[in-house]
Image (cartoon, rainbow, N blue to C red):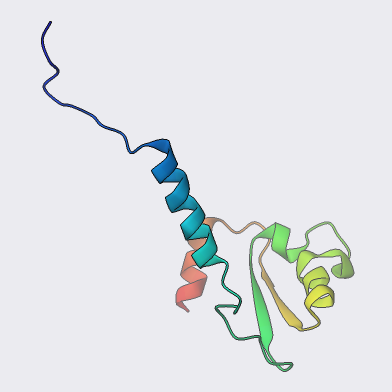
Length: 93
């Protein structure tokens, strides 16, 4: 019986699980990685007709709901019928 030309060895499962656990512990530090937004900050909700709230009352759009949840101003930057490349072009302006 011939030996395989390429020998594949896998990291033992316990080392993988240990590395995963260690990574999760490091990622879940006590301090948040970002500073909270100031009370005067505004958030831009950028997207297509789902963002714009097409077919829903203005209070039912997700930017309006987000504004209520986070207690900040949320600008509805949704454009109905827009495709991804058009949104990308809008970002450039």
